[in-house]
Image 1 (cartoon, rainbow over the protein chains, first blue to last red):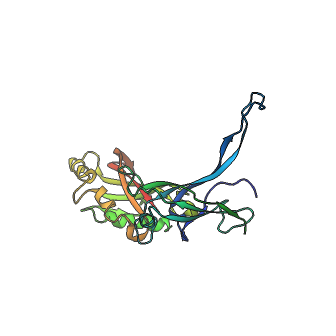
Image 2: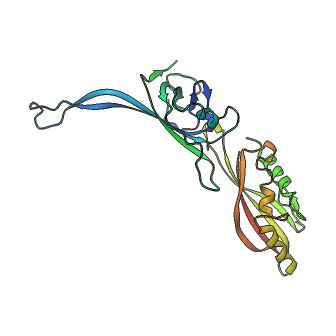
Image 3: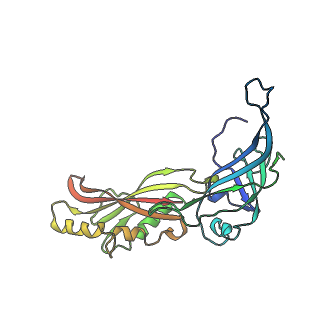
Length: 137
Length: 134
């Protein structure tokens, strides 16, 4: 695997492929910093990893067609959805195109956005709930 | 994405709804005014994952007649108007999916109104900018 330019990450929500309406995808995984600094820290802050969490952020082109991305999100606000993201311009999980699967809380959706003359787009950002799994096959 | 040739042709079809205006999907050797001609300017790939959206820029050049003719100037006023049976903008946007050849389109403006020389003749012309999402 070499360095690559992003052109076609595969994104699905609850099994529906929404890649064709997606222009940007980001999965951020973090671990909380837990401070364990004490008198033995020699004047330095010491931290250990705490609870892990994640955020899925996606940019979409609006489409209210039957089964299209805008209609899909409309019915899912307030629910837990399953998002899969295949990295590396892949279409299936492999060692060089790993698949991340996350349960997310669909807690926001902006069905109407954009200025006159612009392509209608919207951005979502969902917190993950539970473990984010990683697969290569 | 539909072929660029099909998009050109469909734009010319839309322009055919403009009253009293000939149309051409390409630039002819000897345009006969008043005529609208479709020029393909540029394409931006990868507007979405999987090549699912591309952004194409077209210029629709409208030649109305000899630059010195008063009638040509009045005709151009009508073609540049945002509404009306002779509005080129309204004609371009008369079918915004080009019968399924694109996702959407918009005529964003006219960035040039003036004289152009074709075959040693000076004509009055306007250039309309059209963005097509396909």
